Structure formats: C-alpha cells, structure tokens
Image 1 (tube, rainbow, N blue to C red):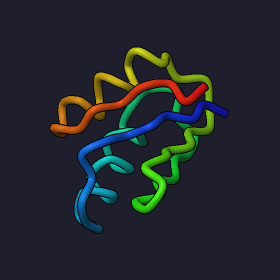
Image 2 (cartoon, rainbow, N blue to C red):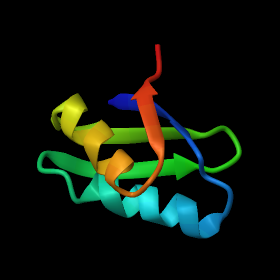
Image 3 (cartoon, rainbow, N blue to C red):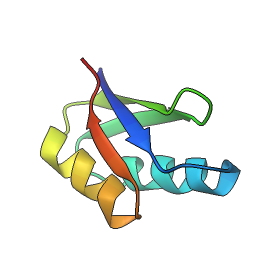
Image 4 (cartoon, helix red, strand yellow):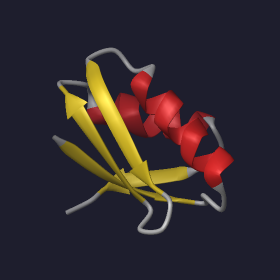
Length: 66
C-alpha cells in the first residue's frame, strides 16, 4: 500500500476528485482519501510518480507520506 499526503483539498468534491484521479492510474486496485487528515491510501502496484502526477493534474499537491 502507498500512502500519500495530499494538500489543497477543502471539501467532499475535492476528496472525490482525488480518489477518482488515483483510481484512474494503471495498477491501482483501490484508493481511499481522507479529507480531514489529507491522506490518501492506494492499493496496488502503481508507479508513485504517476499517482502524484494524477493528483497534481486535478490541481492538488501530493507527496509520499513517510
């Protein structure tokens, strides 16, 4: 599982947009996004750079959660 820190989300629409973007990346089996914590958990073997790029294309920032 990959965990990303996502910043810029302010509402349920944002949360849904990030989840949909992550799930569109090849290799993702599922994703969950928590608006309050700003964390996204992604299941599968997707490329981390592709996950970050998908989030950034939606207008948010993402980084690997250490």
